Image 1 (cartoon, rainbow, N blue to C red):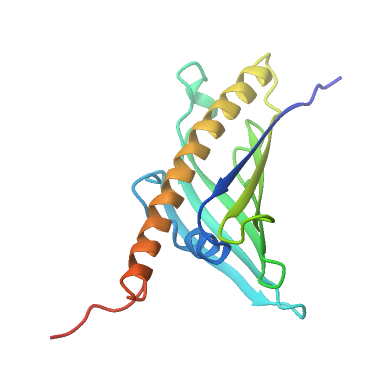
Image 2 (image 1 turned 135 degrees about the vertical axis):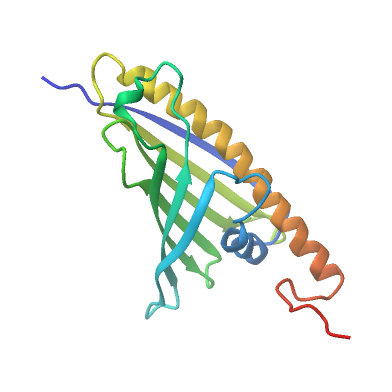
Length: 189
């Protein structure tokens, strides 16, 4: 008889930035000083569906670190591929992203969903809800320990991700205040 446990983590936060800036920052968030673990990002597919929803699939390569107590022989490479699927609906100002790792899934599978919405009471703010499900099928009496490690890593990484988004959002705000397009080419003299 096999036992499959899982760990679910959820959090919500408000951003004092408008929804369109938060969604822009989402696409521009790599590289940033808080995401050195992200090695590469590539768009696999992007289209606008018949309802005007932008749908994107990206492949992200990240490097991780196994805990010292984890047997080295089971994890030869700490890099992992993440699939990210997103839907941006400009009509109702909602962006939903779903990510999950494609390798090391027996050791630990992390599935994350984020929902970014324009705040109902303050149109200049954005509400974000994040939920992650962490599951280990490793066994050997280590399932709970691996999932606990996964949850604490997820919490720490979520805090870094918010700092990275804040960094990009501040850059966007500074560019908008100076009326200079964020991705404008350098001026030639």
